[in-house]
Image: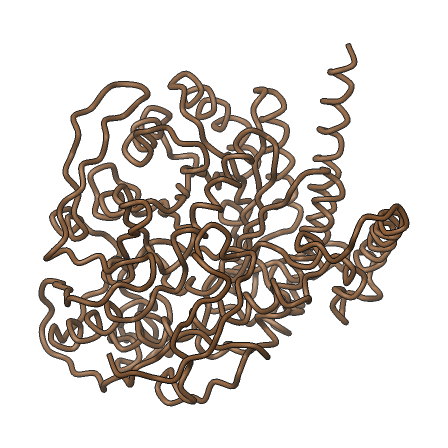
Length: 556
């Protein structure tokens, strides 16, 4: 790799448990990347990742997906070279029925049936892109993923709460610092509301810095007699309905890497540079929510937090502690585009484990969670904390087997079950899943995704989600866990900090007629900032009641 100028990166809390010294040197960003688009300095202190020049795309016939080149180790994280590294033995399951240990290799997923993957017309161009990605630095680090797993283990025990949110699918068009900041800011607000109500740590994870690829029900779509491949996300093909845009282009993976790295660079600066300091809690309100009902409620809560901070300071407790000045923030996305994920997987020298360094947390979707499928085969060999999306179609015994495959050592925080069912199905189906997992002795973090089970088509033809249905599913989630004596561990939301009109309802009453005014999503409808904050207050109230109920029970 060509040498470049370097810059010093000071140790920050999100690197906890990883950096060996007070500073670490990584290559600096060149002035241009992402197909020549200029990237301005996103942080006043540092820029992190190098972006080699990309090549123009060519198209011929599809073939296999070999990846590999030998690259130098990066600090404590080494290249995960499938051609030189030995296979890994996955331990037998420690719960349920014992299974024989299976060998795993970085590319063993290629021997399995892979659904939802694009067919690239040009193998040479694909191989070139994958070799380039393989030589790139990791976007995240193994120590950060381990820290997140520890926090999720606390959520599994009812001692923390996961707030996971962000775009349905990130796009190249909407990539700018303001959009990133606004989504981060609303997550900070929601985190403050949930922390205040639940009196417990809130684990903030963004569907950000890598959430591009989307599974599709149909491989093709047809308009006016023209049939073209479906849009699968900006890292695969374009959303414009023309033949050129819909051809899968491997160069888009390079651009997705660039955008993910730049997004995370900005998020790190926000999380550790003072923007997320608790003393700024009154300044996080977005302009368009300032004079709304939710804005008023948040302002009242912020003033109460301010008073508490003032009391602490008067009592001699310093406000300069890192806990008060910074926040931990992690990234996540669906593990869908396996060639990309394999190219960014590295062997961590401190633990001897493989980590997918494209994100801290990855989840497998409803359409790709087959027990003998390629996606499960890949995920079982990486050490990142993992999510499993679960609908009302999931059989309890199948869920237990899936957890056994992905978490044979039954490690707390390793598996998060993300339920997406709709309110009525939640009340019927979720109890059986909870009981099956409990009988198997498996430790998981239960999380509600109240978005995907509540998508409808508006009279105008646009997809939307009623806020009332979303709220009903969240309430059903808490009700079932209260009934079963289990822990509601978090929520997973498709949301944005922008003032969009994509989901109907909420206190500001977005109607069907309002949808077209600010409908900007590239895929599924998202909660806007006001709706997100309103939902946070509803969840916080349930957490508060749960906390008070637990305290009352302890008194008897």
